[in-house]
Length: 83
Image 1 (cartoon, helix red, strand yellow):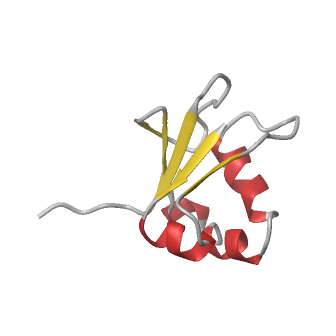
Image 2 (cartoon, rainbow, N blue to C red):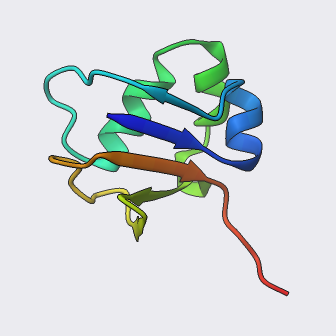
Image 3 (tube, helix red, strand yellow):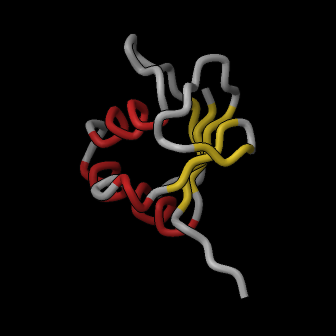
C-alpha cells in the first residue's frame, strides 16, 4: 500500500511517501495511524494527536473509522484552511 504524507506530517516523518505491507488487523484509517505511531520516533511525533491529522483513501477524504481494505493509496495531512 502506498502512503503519502503532506505538510508538517511529511516534515515530521522525513519522507513524502512510502510503500508498506500492513500487518494483520489493520482495518481502518485509525488502525493505520495507530500502527504508524509504533514505527519510530518520527512517526510517533507526526501522529501524536491523531485527531488533527486528516486522511484520504484513494483521493477521497475520509473519517478515521473508514475502512482501508482494497485501498491503493492513503494520504495523511493536517487540516487545511482556505482563503
